[in-house]
Length: 277
Picture 1: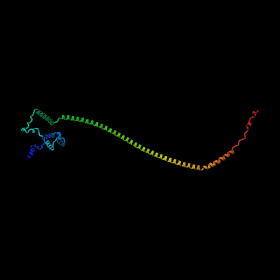
Picture 2: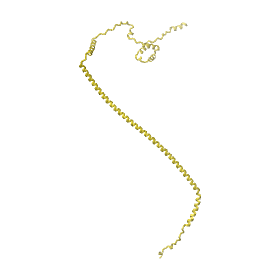
Picture 3: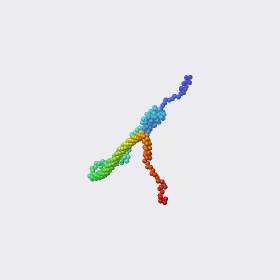
Picture 4: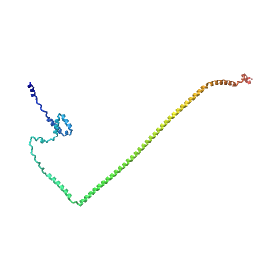
């Protein structure tokens, strides 16, 4: 039984320890050595490497290798070859063109020094003085023209400023007048409104007084009518009796005073005697 259990253990392969993946680390170092990548934040670079499957230890190793200075190509491949002895650099050989340039420069410097060291001539000084005077006169003329132009511009600006100030003053005066008129109009409107309100109140009070006086007059008239009616009613019986007696006596007097009719002549007596003959 022990031999059977030992056989699988002996046949089981031995797992090597986890070693960093060299190829992925080299790719990460190349990625980190890119100048464009170095401009990005370190957190983004670490996150990108971890997203590619690198462990934190491998990322640290790649960062450490990328931060080291990159050796030259010759040093990388010089391990298998012997180092050549270093010879001192050969001095540059002089050419005829170099000599010609040196001669021209030296001649120019010498001529300049000779011109500076030579004593000045009176005619040359007078000529230079005349040229300087002409230049000075020309500059003075230009300055005078510039002064005149500046003065004209300043006068124009002053005139424009004066005109603008006058316009502003006129506008301010107009605004003040309009404001005063508006205030006066508002005052007149308020006064008119107060007068209309006062007239309305007076008219309403007059109407009330007239209504009250009419009501009192009607009340007095109704009282008088009632008193007259009661007086007429109270005196109605006496007037009927007196009126009946007065009417009977009046009829008797009229009958007595009426004229009696005259005796009439018979009609046959009124005939004309001439007609009979």
